[in-house]
Image (tube, rainbow, N blue to C red):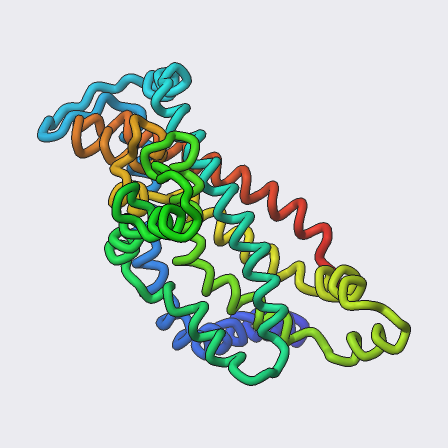
Length: 309
């Protein structure tokens, strides 16, 4: 009988301990539940709903939609406009992310030094990031316009060169938009790199200086390896952000000339809200999301292997 009671006590104690632990953690769960509800309603549900709609020839205002399976995805493989807009998006993203990362790291390295005016320069470089995209569009037009643009004014007035159609030349429109976007978004990665650089112990730089290492060697063998976790964060976030570019080309060039600056998200928007092909637009969004997920995983695998712990 004593043995039976002991075994029952052993079973009851873990149950009561789990209840006490759950009661103690209940306030934490109550704080987290609203976030998960918003996550499920405004993110998970739209994702699954978008995938579902991509399998239909979805017509607005119709109650019964026609199921077509993977036909929208098969049509995408033959859609030359989608290929062109996706190529424009990738070209824009490579230019913008490459310039942003390199320039932001170099400027952050320079501004890490304590000199007179360094704090003012940090604010100055970050200031464009607070502008709205509509303001950026107006500034971009004023900079690159063929007749009234600031760049062409200096080219013709100071250098005596002919005017260049920056936004009308298919070869120059994407680089022009990329440079405008770099000026606008440059501040955030610069501050992130600056925070990462300030976390590197100064003793490492002093030891390298004592050993006779120059600035280039120090930057290559100390700064770059120790900044890799920050580099991973910046590259991934910048890539995801710029792959979804929409407003800059939409406001500044309207996708022109021709389709030279039309991006994948612009094509998605026009397919859904101009031609009301919601199933096809959903397929575009799924493919674009899949590309971003695959590239993000690749970036993690490449950059994470270089992270120094």
